[in-house]
Amino acid sequence: MVSYRELVKNCLLEVKEIMPWDLVARMEENPDLLILDVREPYEFDSLHIKGSINVPRGILESASEWDYEDTVPVLVQARKREVVVVCRSGSRSALAVQSMQLLGYEHAFSLRTGLRGWNDYEESLWSSAGTLVDEAYADDYFTVKLRSDQKAPRP
Image (spheres, rainbow, N blue to C red):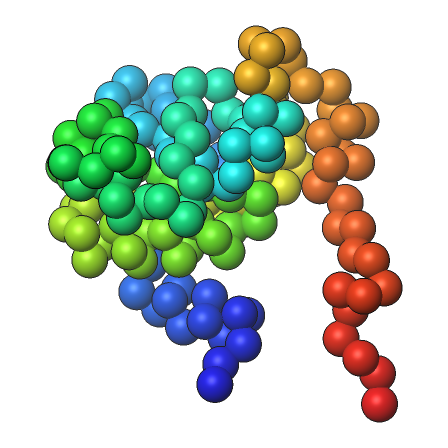
């Protein structure tokens, strides 16, 4: 049995990552770049990179294929496009890119450090209402908040 951290660490051996500052450059250089946010819809609604699309990790594989209720045409047609996958920290996006590679996506990258790192790099984040997210709100949003029942038992 492997832990979630080990699962992510192992998949990073096969996945290409991109840093936030490199994504900024790629966005300027490649107007066809697709930013795919694999967080849950409520997370995406709170804050995301402007112009990104939201396909939750849980339906990614079926959203990437024709003939499913989850099909997202722009994603299905992006197998040859440059795609940068983002999540909160870079873990879900790494797992998503691993699946996408198996599905034939040729230029898929995971945003290393996730949106947390994007925010730390002081890049803008937007709400689904189309408003710029306040930096203080984003900083608080990315602060880890574990309940006591979510922490590993201590011996």
